[in-house]
Image 1 (cartoon, each protein chain N blue to C red):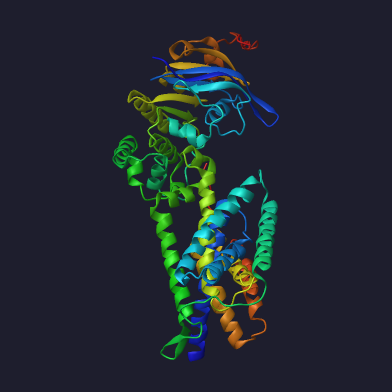
Image 2 (cartoon, each protein chain N blue to C red; image 1 turned 90 degrees about the horizontal axis):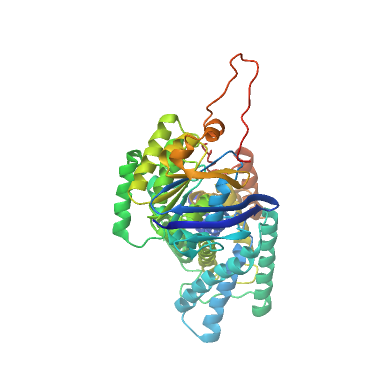
Length: 291
Length: 258
């Protein structure tokens, strides 16, 4: 029983970082209608920037993290402004290729600039220290990831519910022409969406970095986040979070009870299963337009 | 009163389709001006061109609004100058609540108290919206969505309001109600350019009217004159003017303006 609980808890912990990646992907999917394969690398570069700030400039961890988040915002906006927006009347395939291309460019840049060797981000909390709740161990870093994910989710909820910009983002996603007729600068709104998405992803990256850091570190969380987003229906923020926790928990249970070797592929088995049962994803709302 | 909107000889292409073939039009301040025409005549295209929604158009001609050229400006800027369009087919934000839809109408405004006053004003025009305020706009009926679309456009406090087929798909009673409110909005100081297929209603409510065919205006005048015109009656209001007494010879009226 303790084992089972332990696996659930670990699943939730790892699910939190998947959730952040999934949220980022869903945000961009809703704004630009593209599965964003550069999501991981949009987080990767800021993480290495944070590393650079700590090592080369001797700043504190918090200054570095703050700098990384600001840089992520800028990076997301720039990618949209310089590359994605330039595609005139793009089709979905073209956009996917664009994001994959950007992914390779950023990955290559990081490998070239920082090298491919593994390292660890200096962090005040050791990745080995943990607390125990009634027989279940949970590492403090995991706990922090969970808290960060929850804070960001609530933040996003309030942002989309109550802020003018948040509602304008939803309006732009639902009907771009009408949004322009309201005087909303839809291009700017999309750009900011990319920025927010990159920032959310970077939080996940920064919390993974104290465990290990190398140029391919975001690849796995990105794919798992993508899986989670698909399970949730690609357009639903709560769906993405739910999907992420499902992926995290199922992965750990599978790893614990069935096979550790195939743990990594189980997320994709879950996708196949969900898509067979409910092809639109668990949370997608397909709105029927009234005439 | 002077001309608020002055369109001079605009031509618009949709890719290779020559949709607007040289159209000039002035909308006098404080009036309701109506554009009538059949399907595909280009009515909606004129409005979309003025709003800057068709990229790189108008191909030729100029558009002036309150003494300022607005052709080639971005839609967002044109809206900020004080023109608001109620698009054809309502185009409300379906997964936003009624209140959020209305607040999006006031997106460009900074004066919070004014916005709240205008929200009250919209609810006074359309009391049904006040009952539905928390509901998703997509769950409203067609008529309610049309009211919401008009209310949303009013929230930006426009000087000039474009209405694109406000009667589309509504029951006769609702059409009557909508047109009464259009009249009321106009009396409270908003200049209106109305595009309609429902010629009778549009001519009753408007001051000036123009008739559009195949991308050109074919007739223009005071609405009260046009409503008496034989051609307009026959082709746009479905009044059959001449029928053979014996019933075997039926004369089709020639459109004299061509």
